[in-house]
Length: 167
Image (tube, rainbow, N blue to C red; front, side, top):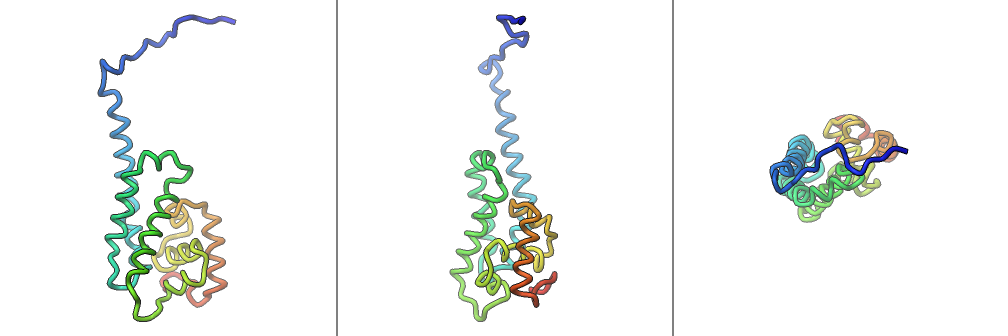
C-alpha cells in the first residue's frame, strides 16, 4: 500500500481569505429567498381558501415565512423542509380560523371538521386552489401517492365536493 505523509492539495488558510466562507451564507439566504418567492403565493391561496372573510391571510403567511427564515439553517438539516414549513403554515392558518367566528359553516370548514388534516389540505389545494396532486405534494412536503390517497379519502366523505372549483 502506497501512502504519503502530505496531501497534494495545499492547505487553505481561512483567515487569509475570509470571503471564502461568505458564499455559503449568501447561498443559504438565496435558498430561503427562492423558497419564499416560490411558495408565498401558493401559501396565500391556501390560507385564503381555508379562512373565512375577515381573517388576516397575509399575517398567517408572513408569520410562517418569518419563522422559516429564523430557523432556515435548522430547516435545511431536516428530512423535509417543505413539510416542516407546511406544518407551521397550517398552525398559523388554524390560529386565524379559530379567532374569526364564521357566520355559517363553509365547505372548507366542513372538510377540516370531518377529515384527517392531510386529506383536508389535499382536497382544499386540489379542488379549490387548483393544484395538481403533484404540486400539492411538493408544497406540503409529501409524496404524490400520499396526496392521492388523501384525496380518495376526501372523495369518499365529500363526493359532492370532489372536483376542482367545487369548494
